[in-house]
Length: 314
Image (cartoon, rainbow, N blue to C red):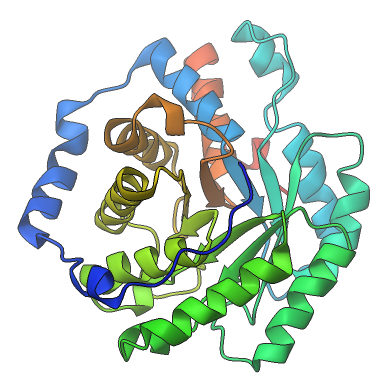
């Protein structure tokens, strides 16, 4: 992804963004009714989902040991015996590991000699309600300790009060602090009230320089949903049509089942086409999803479901 600067904020463009709620609901309701992914195709899609995954640990009880175990799993996401039965010889890995700034240094060491990106949350995750100087200090600390991607949270009250210029300036500042590193902007869709706010926050973030827009922190009452993702993907498509710039999408929060991951892959492919199915443009943020995907892959090769404890993440 080529680093870029901000595009001037056009308030009229932001206010023109609206959502046809009934059309969004119809589209999402018919998604899986029209598409059925079975057998070997399902296994192939699940392997793709792993390769797009930001394996995440953002818990209050995170320790260096837990992060090291997450990183080991990131480098070895599926047991070798399962991969052999799938006739997959080349190693696979997740796209990134995502941790708190305090634990970036630990993750950096654990991920050495791998091609896995290291993402850190910042800017007062998960609420964004800390002083601006603290937000920039978190970004700087994460980069200093070895992060290659930064997942920032916006101050959602700026969306709820339609303070678009202030939100724009925030993201411009975050992008400047990140330099050439990927900036993922978490809009916190579950706190925004309406899909119209979701699409407007997405546009402001993209104009300000976001490399990715991300659905949720995983801490909101409602996190990633297909309707939220659909309006964000269409915002990305329209932004690309207007500017020629490709912005990535990250679905995160509440995605714990393999079937959900396939839903997002299909939605991504149908709305933005094959070229967006690339880890530089699409991510799934999750913590427990990988265990269910590995369980489904074992079922495919063995014909039987194993217990969850056969596929530990940490």
